[in-house]
Image (cartoon, rainbow, N blue to C red; front, top):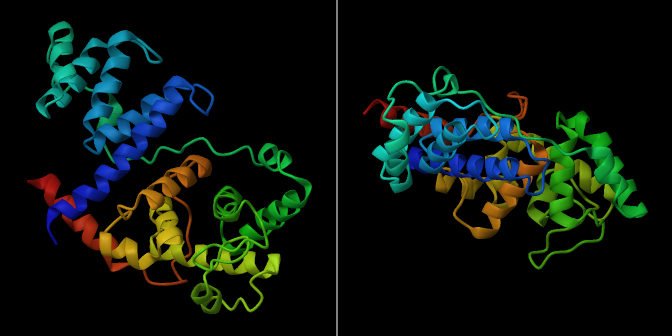
Length: 284
């Protein structure tokens, strides 16, 4: 498989991290948290995202949210400038090119930065009473399927706003919006029964978590577009609806990785191919 396939998946993750970092840097939709923004920018920079390199360099150059550090800033601006960022080239006039002196987060094994999870009780309390009942059923059943409640609730709210009678134009049914094939696959004979529908959706999520080895972005994409589409595109499919869906789920779940039960199903062979391509690309 060409290295470009691995690049695409890595680039998508970097862009998602940058968008999340911007939210925390400026307090847009979440409490302002510059340190968290810096950590997210740094992980995105490790993945090669030029905007993240520049944004984190700017934070260090100006002491905004992190302690001012001209060497860190210069190293980050140099990285971004070598990749064609004109603003970074301009900033190098002030910081100098401090190659190799970037922050520690750029070195060593990649660390997944956990995003800020939903305050579940506050979210549920804002729902209409009939939706609160469904939300509590969903979050109480989720751990029985090895699924953390924020992921289960994010999927349920995004799919149907927790409406047990929801029916989409594509014949997706109930709280978890199960299409007929998925309902049959996970033994859901009464898709408009809230508990049975939720159990079927949670069983599918458990399967997706094992198949994509806990990668929340791929799991969300698989739930929205089908695991086959994720495999074909070797990552989140380039459908606007699916990409917006994935970003929303990641924002609410608060983490990029989720525990999974590897006995449920063998992982997608696409994952290994992506890792090989990414490794080959970084070694060239």
